[in-house]
Structures are given as C-alpha cells and as structure tokens.
Length: 612
Image: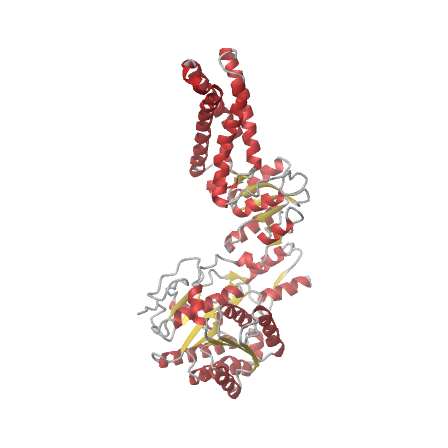
C-alpha cells in the first residue's frame, strides 16, 4: 500500500474508532438518561476504554478502512453490521472478565448495536449521496457462478460495471479483482471488490487469483479514455498471460441490460493506436462555421463526409456538397437529410478538374468557407496514373483556389497529407504542388483577401485505400498480411479526430490576418511501425502472429519512403500551437497532445507564428 493509500486508510480507521467511543457514551446516555451523571465514574471510564480498544481490534481485522467511500453500497453496510456484532461480542467477553456484567444494563448492548451501526454507516452513505446525488443503486446480489473477469481501472467505470453485474441473477460476469495505474487505490475496495495492484503487477495478480481458484478469463478495460501506449501494454500483457482483453460496454448498453446479458466490446485498432484526445476550442470552430455558407469538395469521401457531418452540426446557413462520384454524393446527402432535415443544402456533381463547372458551382453557392477535400490518394494507383494525379491533386486544387478567390470567398481550407513532406512518390509530389500554390495565394492576398489555410496530417484509420482495411481483408482470407518495407512507419489518427483538428486549425488561422503562407501540421503523436500494426491486428483477431497468420514484405519501398515525418527532416521540428488556445502568441507543444502546428515557408526551419 502506498503512502497516500495508507494515510487514507489511517484516517478512516481513526474515524471509525472515534465513532465507537462516541457511540458508547451516546448509547449509555440513551439508556440511563440524566442518571448517567450519577453513574460511577470509574465504571464509565473503564467501559469506554474497553469498548474502544475492542472496536479498534475488530476494525484491524475486518478492515472497513479499505472500502472506497465514493462507492459505498449495501455490501459495505453488511460488513459494518458484521463488525458491530463482533465488537459487541468481544466487549461482552471483556466486561465479563472484568465485572461479571454487574455494572452495565443488558439493554445497553441492543442500543449500542443500532447507534454504532448508524454512526459508521451514515457518513459513508452521506459521502456517496454528496458525490452521486442519489442512493438508488445500492442493492447488490451474489455474483457466484459467472465468468470471472479482472477489471482494469479503479474508477466510475469499475463501480458501474460491478453494480450492474450485481443487479440480477442472469448477469454474465463476476468481478474477481481490479488493477489500476494509480497506486493510491491499491489495497482498497470498490463495492467489496479489492484493488489488487497496478498494471505492472498484472502477472502477479493473475497468479494470485489463480492460486485461489479465481483465474480471470478476461481483462475488461473500464475507462473510456486510455492512451494507445497503455492499451498496447495491457494487450501485450494479456496476450502473454493467455487472457483476452475487452472493453466495458457503453453506459447506455449497461443500463439497457439491467443486470441481464452484457456483451463486452472487443479492443479495436483505434484503441491500440489511440492517444488522449486534445481539448479543442469548439466555440471557435462554431464561430468559424455558424451562420455562414460552406462548400465542401470531395464531400462523399472519408474526410469529406466527416467534414460534412461536423460542419452541419455547427449550424451553417447553407451547405453545398460537391463530388464527382454519384453514389458517394447520394449517400452523404441522404445521411444529412435524416440528420439535419432543416439545413439548407445542395448536392452537386462536379469534377474539380473542370474549371467551368467549378466556377459555376462557386458562383451559384456563393460560399464564405470552402473545404477542399477532393483528391486522389492511393499511392500505387497514382504511380500508374501520373496524369490523373496531376490533373486532380495539383491542377484541380488550383482550379478550386482560383474560383474561390475570384468569388471573394473568405477562406479556403486545403486538406493535404504527410506524403507531401520531401515527396518520394507522385501522390505526395502533386499534393506538395497544391500546397505551394495555396501558400503563394495566401501570401499575395494581403489583408482582407481570401485566406488559404493548408492543413497536413497522416493516415486516417479506416479511410478508403488505407492499410487497416487492407489488413482486415487479408485476415479474412487467412493471410498473409503484406508490408511494403520492414521499417515502414506511419502516423495514424481517427477520421473524427482528423476533421476536428482541421476545423480547429482553420478557426485559428482565419481568426487572424498574421502569419500568412504557413502550413498547419497536425501533431499525431508517435509514428507506428506497420509491421507492429500487422501484429496487433493479428492478435485482435484472436490469432498468433507468425503461427496462425504470416506476415510478409511485399513490393518495393525505399528506406526514405518507409520512414516519413510530418515536417521536412532537414528543418527539424517546429513549435506547436495548443489546439485549445485562443489566437495569440503560439504556445509550445505539450507532449502527447494532438493539435495543429504552424510553420513558415522558406529557410531557417519552422518556428511559431506570432499573432498581433
């Protein structure tokens, strides 16, 4: 038990001993009334000392001090009643040895039982009531005979899971223990379930439970947000112990089950690769979009469709969707019709390479903000179709930029890629051309002209043509999972996170006229080796890497292409902007936070923008 946990337990133990002393005097007063003042003083003092010492000894054995008051329940009340009965039995033995029970009225013991129980239980339930505002979920039932599980995380999620499992006889799982990354709660209890150790003690905890015939058959993550490194660590430990890892169902699913069958969620790739979500300035994002006319190119794609969803949620006055794919455009338009039926929207088929069509669309929609997400992104296909890559990614971006500038659009947000950094393939080179043109227009625009904001990020999990769906298809066929280079590394983020950061970066850039011509780089945390990703996905499928499913190196890839950054390596890493900061001097990046970074074009390396 750590120092902090020991101090908490000592404070609870002291409280309980003090309540025992108070209950003795209060019970004696309730029995004798004013006659207590004439009762022999040595008898009262001897009885008080004997009762208090007996209570302290019982508390040391029963260990009421290990229970977390935040999660007090009926189970804790049962333990309190048991402790009170033991105290009274011990006191009877002591008093019999001292006085043969001649000095105390027999009814005192009955009164003492109720008084001490109330004094021990009331503060605990009052604390829970103060924290939760309700004592509606204090009933528990036996959980024997269910699948034993070990919870990871001693907090609200664990308490909720234990409570739901105790509500009904049909519940699937029985919680045999908890491990937590915070040492302060080791040795304490939540609803009678002990926190057995930290994450570093997981193997020892499992061995201890196995020795008691309680080996867990599953590890259950109970925290909604755990960084990717922690999830990978838990997953690897579970894999080494032969115990699968799952996530606790969402709160709504638990409440719907109401003690019945609960299905644990599997760990997915987002959990393994995830990181703590940055706190974003949603008010600034809303101010950018709310009440304005917005146009999104590539609206049917992975990034474009998520942009449409999030922009629609911020209440634009009108939203125009543009895509060259009829089915993709139809799909997102129908989804938007159901999600935001009152929104003024238009779905227009158009190719960004068609200058006349793009100019017609922009004139008709008269947008104030343009998000340019249309692009051809698949690297091998672009190598085989260079002309189309140039026409769409480079010339198409110029067409959209020129049309927006001619129409007096307030801001154009160009969505780029980390492949544009020191490009080694056609796709990256064409996106770098688009970036350079947007930067040039932003620089020559001056105050009051159209802002051109360029955002750059890496791979989006699950997007069309990305490696994750490819690996999933290969797994379904039984493998092998193919990697183009053993040292291949990539930055990953979820599509929702990518779009939120795009909106945040746009809000920060458009809010100020200073620092034109930059590129906002989204900080995506640590890069992931594709070989390691393949191994993780094989494990997630319940298989053993290199035994059940093989991994192979397939296709040429240079070392330079394999290891890719988000800023040019010759320039180093720039100072980052906090995504939640208001416009002002750029803040230094906080490690682990996902947020936009800005750098100026030209020599001298990236540096923070300074706002007026």
